[in-house]
Image (cartoon, rainbow, N blue to C red; front, top):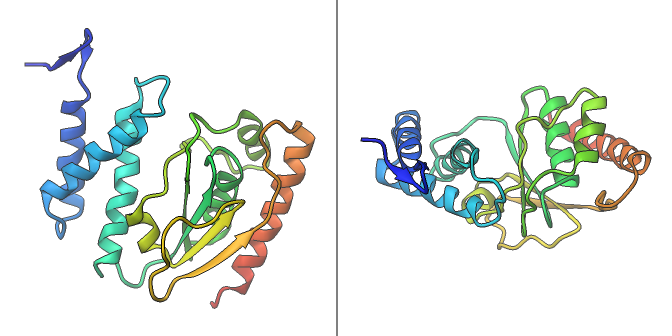
Length: 210
């Protein structure tokens, strides 16, 4: 029987199916933990959502990031790319840019995620437009909160206009990147910020050991 909520199909069935699929992908994690992370991720995103139609797939993407982080912290994902977490206040622009360039230019050596202290509802349109212009679209990007599991799993934490909200764990390093906030700026100004972010990312990647 289909679960109904406010006249529409409840997301619970979709989330449970997604959790079962993620549990198969992470056999070292307790399936009950996987399902809890999925539903917790959905509830977290729902608190700031204006439109809830597409929340289940976004929650599953968010949960997948968190589960990889949990597995990594537990020692189940050794030898992979450097995990970089880029943090900002809203995760609607500057951190999305940096993470996208790290992934696009990193040649598989880096996996970058971005997150916020206080996530916005959506990525700034001007940011999406100028990144599209540069061939690095933010099609699948959405604002999401920084969580303890993501923070603990990161090898490098990059803060952008904020302080990191958690204690560092052994072996982590942190960098502060100082950029203007693109919110409310003109397209030309956002382009200039984009170009600075790209140069900063290139410098970061060049300094990594081969």
